[in-house]
Length: 134
Length: 82
Image 1 (cartoon, rainbow over the protein chains, first blue to last red):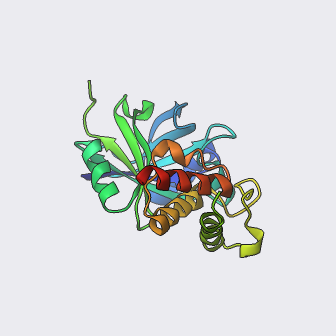
Image 2: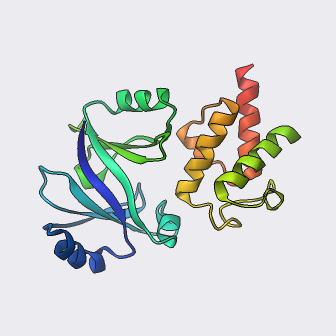
């Protein structure tokens, strides 16, 4: 597995980008994705071949990050790129973690599948399939 | 519903959500408990799984709208395991 990005929840992507570019010295990749499945808007800063920062903005009142944002937002999750999501979820389950969402395609990753899990160590983890699956 | 299961879930929720036990009822929900956000929901699920030795499916996490429904799911899981 490889660390793909760190998710950071913000109230407004548009208003947050300049501060992240200045504060971290990262380049904004220039695209904002609206993901109706996850009910968020996301964008990325940093170089694609290194771990990036993902800004996550709720896209409606039912967004799963809405309550997290209400408490201030901030660091939210780690995303690991993996060859086989099912294998990673089975391993996490065996270690006592929770599968929060089974694999679904994600618009922000060109249709590659993502899954969500929560570890016994109280860490929210997103898994990203390394390759697009047929 | 079993009082012991409900009371155990109430006690777990009291610890996770940092609420007095007496304030946690079967109707306590994210709408009534300020601390019950999406992350604390997962902490509650983890603690309930550990306490009862049950495993919840992803779609069941969304069915836990209040403490009573969490307890009801635990009871159903335990019946299915018999």
